Image (cartoon, rainbow, N blue to C red; front, side, top):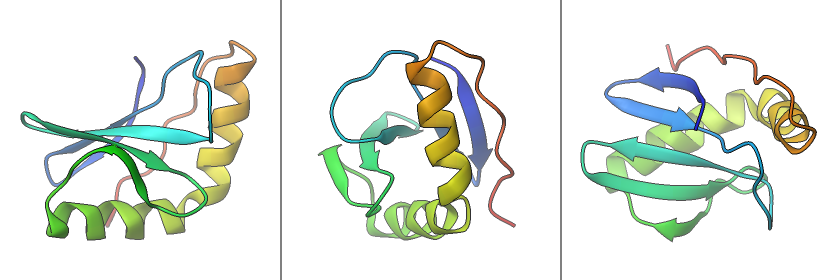
Length: 86
């Protein structure tokens, strides 16, 4: 699964061929979650409140890039890296 960003120990990835609502995967250590792009809502797994807040802020800043990467992934194209949270 391609890594598209990382910040503060949080790794963001997106699968090439996923189904359902557009989303990305988050991992920090042993904890992981699937997060919906449009809302920042956790749709599977869990994150700490702090990490979820950071991920939502990052996703809000990079929503257009995430949506573009989702379309690229669905088409089987290489995903673009996205800047980390400052």
